Length: 60
Image 1 (cartoon, rainbow, N blue to C red):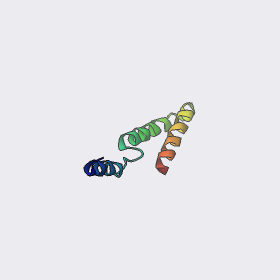
Image 2: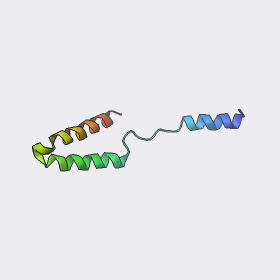
Image 3: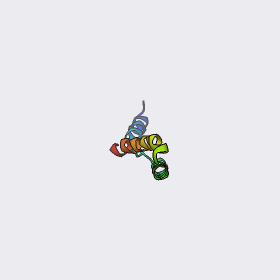
Image 4: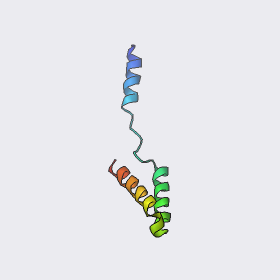
């Protein structure tokens, strides 16, 4: 492997990683949470899933 190729490989490996929850999925999850919160008991299970996802992503 040439030195230039080795450097390019190393540079690629140290690039910053994307955020755990990109803004779009996080925004959609928040929108779902707000809507599900207003639906009461019939949406409780779905709301719990959204809240669990938000908690998991917040820890990243």
